[in-house]
Image (cartoon, rainbow over all chains, first blue to last red; front, side, top):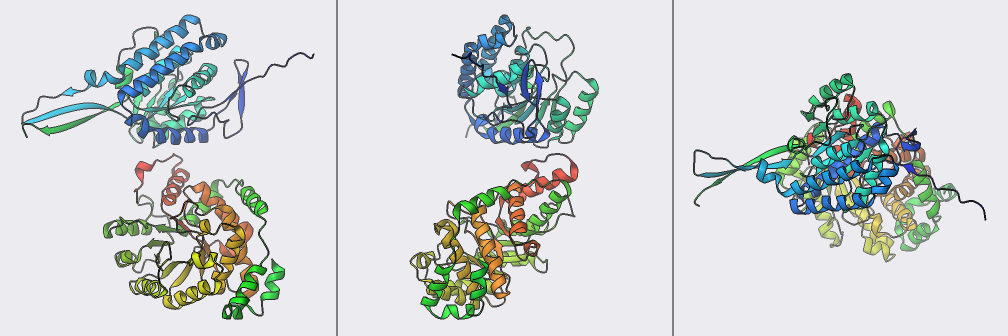
Length: 274
Length: 319
């Protein structure tokens, strides 16, 4: 019997719950694998998919979102060996699963912490509640490959935003594998979309896109590119998260700022005693 | 096809006089190769239109849009807003052309006419008991006359599909002729409702029937049944208008309607028009899109080409 030939995997994009190749047909070799090289049109398609998913995801109950995110953590746990095989240290996988569960728990608690009743000078209840901002573009940090990725995606989606993630060009395999986890864990298609390839090609498109509401520049190491992206993002007044400072400790307690940075506040007045 | 066309040249005008002659002619039309038509349409849909050609195609497509609202919930305010949008689709860019026409129900025609007066944008009204067409002929004609009297210069009529499918071609023919005369100077678009005609052969027959009876345009669909305009159906209709002009010398327009929502779709249709009937039809007088949401996508793509930045639906009006 002849020797078995192994089936090699092509790492593709993740857009709208599907795994398409790049519209441009291009790929690049990285981490000993063929990975799709996304074009600006893939970025546009990803934004369309993310926008279409906003209504359902933001409209889902916080309890439901929390359950789905917890399910993601379950699936992530089951893929531990695969991530280790990609070179992610085992304790980082553990930390990533824990981080995901931690954020999942915030889904129905953040409104109590971040919203509340405001005292006003009149016979009214005045209540402020956090609302998702919409479509968020995220540039994932290069290191740590999995924990960094989870630490930027989970806080954005737990509150009801949808995201387009530009994976690290040098470490895309963890991102595509995480996409495979997301695709099998009840997360509606389009809530998370993953683009692999050169940042200089996809991220300026996302930063300038009028239908993107916020951009997280965490993974942008090049200061010049970051400045250019902020200028582009100003056109429609996107919320901007600045790049992470060098030596940022991803294993430390993240706090709630990554979630609150991507929220808007809705305040309602209600007459008392009627 | 051309063989039929030349042999028919002499006696086409006589066909309407007898049911038998009409039936013999329509059933003598060659059958449509279904697989071939679908494959041809799919192949033409793969063309890539970029940069300046795309910019031209988008402007042409905007000029070809029949901006349509045919809802029970239409109000005078809504149709007036729609008419204002037809005149100036992109308020931020004065170089954006106006659309081809506004298409509304007869009761809404007077409200639109006020806004469009003297603008060059046509005012189309559906008539003849749209969308089913299941009403007595007198009612249909009164519907048509009322729309024309109120200011419509284009009438979109529906054919009597019940009669057509039952094989009573004369009845369908006579209704179109009667409606055409009720239109007066207004242009008549004949809606075949291809989604209910079941086969491409029927689409070809209905196209010829509508053209023989005097229709100025043939239109695919009402937009009120699940299957609306498709590329292969439009291909069959384009071939029919091409062969009809070869046979009679009279040019008839084509209007696909319903289900065309993106710029990409619209450009596929334009490619097909150019490849099937040629540049003579690449004009709002001879080709239209019946659509509502298509316009916003065209405007977004146009904005992308002029500014270099992808736009979003937040920046364009809903209706």
